[in-house]
Image 1: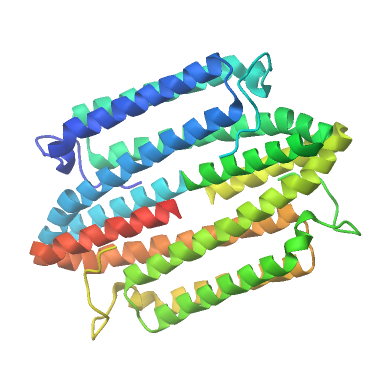
Image 2: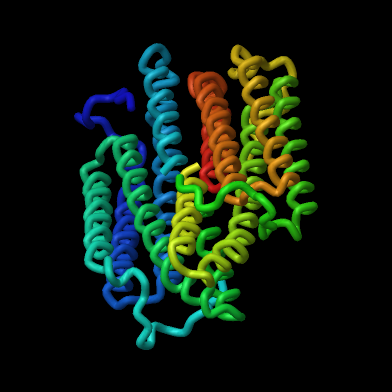
Length: 104
Length: 104
Length: 104
Length: 104
C-alpha cells in the first residue's frame, strides 16, 4: 500500500460534509455486530446468523463505496487537477484501496 | 430464503463448542467498527478508513465461513444422514446462505 | 485444498443431469469473454468493458453456486449419510471450495 | 449507469498502450472457460471445477482492476484536470463501475 498523503494536518477531507451521516451508519453497523454477538450467545440458528452477517457485510460495503466516491470526488480530483507526481500517487493509492475492497 | 428449522427449541447448534471463541471474535469486530467511527470523527484520511473497512469485512467473512463449516459439519450432516425432505431443505437453505454471502 | 475423492472412476457426479445446461451456460460465458476481447481490440470505452466484465463474473458465480448446490445435494449428502471420515473430508472440502469462491 | 462519454470517436483510451497484453490475458481466460466446458463434458469432480471457476473469476477481477486503474489514470485524471461537469460525470461513472464490480 502506498501512502500518498501524510496525516490529516489541516486537510479537510471530502467526506466531512457527510460526517454525521457516516457516523450514524457506522453506529448502526456497530449495533448490528452487537446483535450478532447476542445471537451467538442465545445460540440462534446458524443460518439466521449468517443472514445477519451478510447484511452487515453489505452495509460495510455501502459505507466503503460512499467513502471511495467522496474521496475520488475530492482528493483524487484535486490532485488530478494539480497534476504531476501527486496525481499519480493519489490514483495508485485509490486503485490499491479498490483492489483491497474487492478482495475482502 | 427457506427456513428449514423452527426456532432453537432445545436444539444444540453445531457452533456451540466454539461459542466463546465466536463471541470473542465478534467483540473484536465490534471494537473495529467503533474504531471506524472514531476515524471518521477524527477526520482520518479516507484511504486509511477504507483499509480498515476491508479488514473488518475480511474478519466478518472469516466468521461466516467458520459458522458455515460448523453448520454443515453438524446440522447439514445430521439431516443428510436422516435423509428425506429435511435433508433436502437443509441443503437448499445452506446453498441460499452461501449465495447471500457471496453476493454481500 | 483437500481432495476427498480420487478421480471420477465410474462415479456419476451430481451435476450430470444438468450437464447439457452447464455446457450451454459455459459456452455462453466463453462467447462473452470473446466479446470482451473484441471490445478491447476495437478500443471500446473502458467503463463499458468493465460493465461487461461484471456481467461475466456474475454469470460465472451463478454457475459456481449451481455446481456447489448440486455437489452438496449429491456427493456431500451421500457421504454424510455414510458417515465417518469420508463425510468429514467431503464437508471440509466443500467448505474450502466455498472459501475460495468467496475470496475470488 | 451514467454514460459520461459518447462513443470512442477518435478518443484514444488509456488502456491502449497495454492493448496487446489485455487481449492476451482475455484469450487466456477464454481458454480457461473452454477448459471448464471440457471438465463438465468429461464429468470431472465438482470441487475441481469449482476451483477452476475461482481461478477464472480471479483472473477476470485482475483484468477489471487493471482496466479501472488505467481508466482513472487517463480518462478520469484528464476530466478532473479539465474540471466542471465532465469531471463530475467521469467520477460518478467510475464509482458506479466500482460498485458493480464489487457486487458481481
